Image (cartoon, rainbow, N blue to C red; front, side):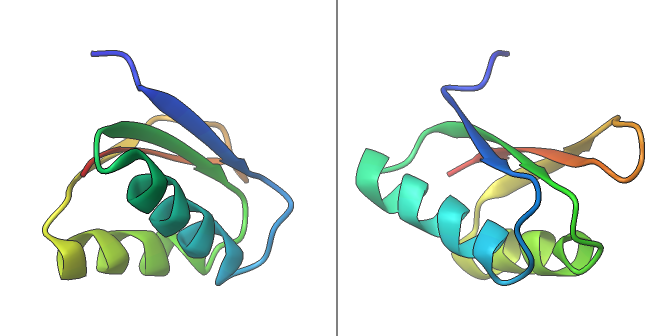
Length: 73
């Protein structure tokens, strides 16, 4: 499955990756998103955000320090 939209939050510190994801989901009214982030705090914040909203989330393989997820909202 390919992502409907890529959200590139590399170089942004939390909470910005989570805020960018939430804004993209809200603007699109849902869908499939791929999020790229580097802040280690995102490893905690992004899954928590997905759980709070009932979104499906899958962490994808990536070379450190990159973190990568596929989110179905």
